[in-house]
Length: 560
Image (cartoon, rainbow, N blue to C red; front, side, top):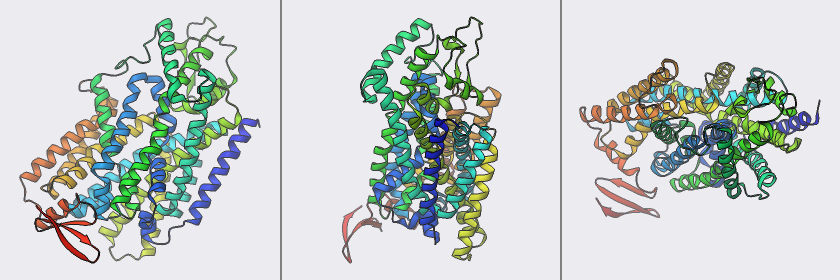
């Protein structure tokens, strides 16, 4: 065993022990703990948990690699995901928290007065979360497989066992505090390598400032090698694909059930808004660093690996070639490795860069621990969403409404175990790269939940038949376009499978509006509840007037 293996293994085992210890200490004892952490999480810690929930393997492992490979076109991921978070924080999260339910399907069922709508939403939650979790478990397989030098499939199954254990035991309460720890691990693991690379390449330890110099040098290298310039827009995809992907990620973010439920874990609307503000700060630390990470990685590969003798490549290349995610074949048989002869998977760039930059065994091990934290934190949140859909929205609300609290917890825990195992089996042979799989999940969320929630909060005329038709049509259009684009080569304006959400969301919104307008309007009570959601928690809307609570009295605030 070499030092790198021992250090990496020790760091990952230490963090695993930390996560399991937190889950055991914060074991869920009642359903409110299991689903919404007792609604008692402070905003700053909820912001950290949201950050960990949000910064999945796609963000930690895949995003910098995607930007490194795609250049300018990869920025759609950063702009879409960040913009979507603003959309969620300001347009939906506080209003959904005021409604006071446990899950997104429960909100849809009660807001639209429809059991059928709740069931469809529960099924959509399972489909979206399952798709997303396949990407996370695939990422954990990459990390563990490289660490202990086994096949990625074995690494994936190790991740499955760990996630199933601490998610089922702690529920949302355990997951929340585990995610706080995972955020701290992943952000430290992400920032230290990029800071060291900035110091190594530019002499400036501030990567967010210094990577502009490296971009200028990359442009010169691109011209010398005769390859597409790194900063030239729309070289890897059309302008329409860039915009469609950005919209899909924004709308999908605002409709992801496992992210929305995090805003249910705080006590008030105000706390929900502050959670969003803290989360933006914590998420921004990684998202602002990803382009720098990508630029430094590409620069090191172009200057230190490309142009080297095929028989004199750095030792790290052999280990990554063995994983099947790096190819360095000498295609023209000249004995020199050309830039165009390096084929590197988006998913290994962040993991491999500390080795490429020779940052030392501790940094390599820390990066591995951070990548695992990112994959596990999001996977845990996704499993809770699947479990809540199965045990609360389907089992408790539809099948057995008289179930005891103990029985509901038992069903919830077994739902997590089974969902994790099934997702892990599919992740053994994932249908695409991590960022691509995650983009599909966002497309499905943008075609189903985003229109239902947007119209449910901001259009009082939207009704049960409208939301049912909208979700069914939106999901169908999105799925059909993903399959047609990926496997049939069908595209509109060059928009590929990852931009499918733009068609699904458009179809769902139009269907919801048309069906709602041609069927009976919701009751006056429901319409007043919808208007009431738009006011701060201390205000209520009733009989066309807004009332403000003052201590134990309620006084009229303004007439509408």
